[in-house]
Image 1 (tube, rainbow, N blue to C red):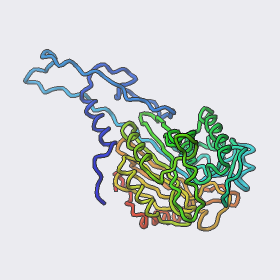
Image 2: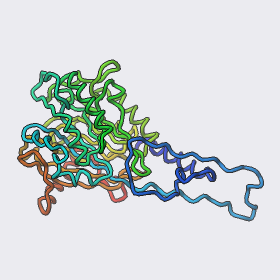
Image 3: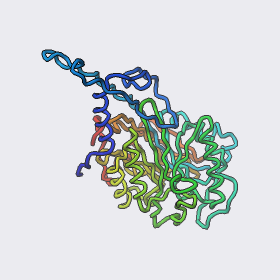
Length: 398
């Protein structure tokens, strides 16, 4: 597979190295990259790199000719962070009653969801209590307590760019946006992406700073599945709210390229592919390549209700399909699920871990262990072949 041109991330890192070599004086404890840092913490606003003043270039400041020029110590690399991903979540059927106690709704799986520094899922439902069901085969709606349940379980970001986000029309969308704003400022907070009051809002990323690492996370839908009810009409526009639809990917690619120039890690969570398929479609593969070239570090997705392959595409970790996760129906093909946890540093993804799970009759996943876990992990790894992805090596490269 041909290598891409120098990525925005590489340009940014090169600029940072040049800048640190030029900066000698004027750093405070807050912007000195060599200052000790506290354990990784997350904030919802991306921080700007500290600036410094170059030292004087006068003759008196130069070292004697027989003395080797001094060099500033190399700034330590940011500590690696972990980002976890899970697939489709809703609260239909037997799951609805769990929202009577949202803080405990996902308690059985919460220790696994909350273990990473940042956790991202796909929320496959409309949020609210009003609106009219859209003319489609399946319509899902959950009360705002669903967002509280996700946050309480350790989820930090939920994308609603999917084929159920507007199941209850524009009135339902108004409910969703109000609930999302309340969740954003709640304790603990939850960011909702991929849906908004207009197209700019829908395509806006969630931004988190974890320790010294700035992360941008986008959500978008590619509703080109011939087996699914059409939902491209839900696309947000400059005048109307909706979801981030990337059938024409130019806006998404441009946003990713821009984010890659100012963030250490760029993530895209996509609703894409064909239901029932374990291998990615041609459009999935094409868009993954475009996002990789634009500077995305991680591209993950769901929609097929089955697991799809995961691995490296050039410098980008791609997981085409994470399947169902908290779901009201299951069969042997759709009950297999898990949590994907990626370790990321300033060079990109360096490690991946798959925690296999199986969805129970009550709709909740249970982590499997022993030989069962080994078998499920092997099955997931085998899906990499038809996905055309490379295995991540210990060096973090394919």
